Image (cartoon, rainbow, N blue to C red):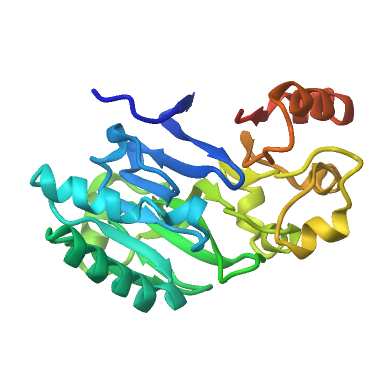
Length: 279
């Protein structure tokens, strides 16, 4: 395997979170078990086999590797990928791909599909993705991946299997749909984007940006440019019901030791051990 880019890996229960994120540098994530990824700021060779991607917004550190990803899959004779983007990005990205294809003299086959806040995508019988608005300097989206199950309705739970079968054959719907938020991805956003989607606070795994951590950086200016500050996390501490919160996308103004020191000072318990710094 070619190791062309940094990839950090963390396992939580049955999910593997892989990727790398640094503000203004590059952001890319994937969850292999779910067969999907978020953002294409660069493309590790090992990520090429993931067929479905959700791009949160069109800043270059989040989407510049989209053509590279498409070209590699074509070169390796893989099926054209499906890439979801904010709807405003579909037409310009299509033009970009056509121009690059002309210069490269190679096809760039893929499906570019538009998304807007409130959309819901059924990726499979068991997997649904919902789309929420986020607040950044360009059109931007957040995503929640839900596991969908069917559960027997309470009024039928005392029946035997034969009786349940007969009800089903008679046309009775004996189950309810139950959804479990597995993974939430905020992308780049000021706190308004997090607050707009309550499910982000409930997902088993939340991947969020935390671009600024130093007390000397002003929150009003940070929010104006569509980013989060450590204080924003502290103010919402009681709302995070996640099993794992991944803080990422730290500013290049900080060394890794500075990030750890600032967070440890402000939040020594690391959200009861649930907060992980993706450095």
